[in-house]
Image (tube, rainbow, N blue to C red; front, side):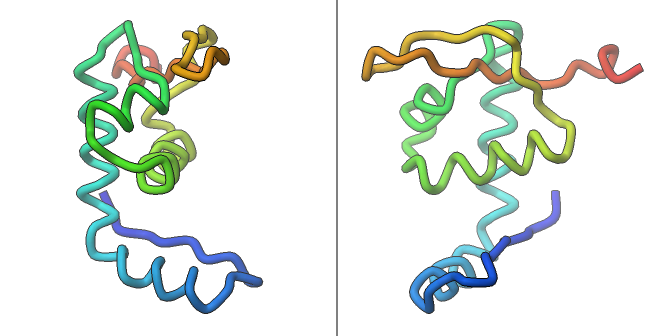
Length: 101
């Protein structure tokens, strides 16, 4: 997986600094998120479940999950689970190789 950091054109200096600082780690973070979703199989995982299991802040985990979705490696399962705030949360699943054909 390639390391990419997306920085908004109007991002503040502190945001640009933080994005550039995390750049060397983005591939391993994304790999950790992907491997967790794969291990969950058909049960999939919500963002909050990933964050808890991987000991990651949402601001770290979510961009990796978004990139995995954009890259076609995961999908919205069409189901939700109630998160710790009592709200429905999307369950994400890894794409099975058989689903790609």
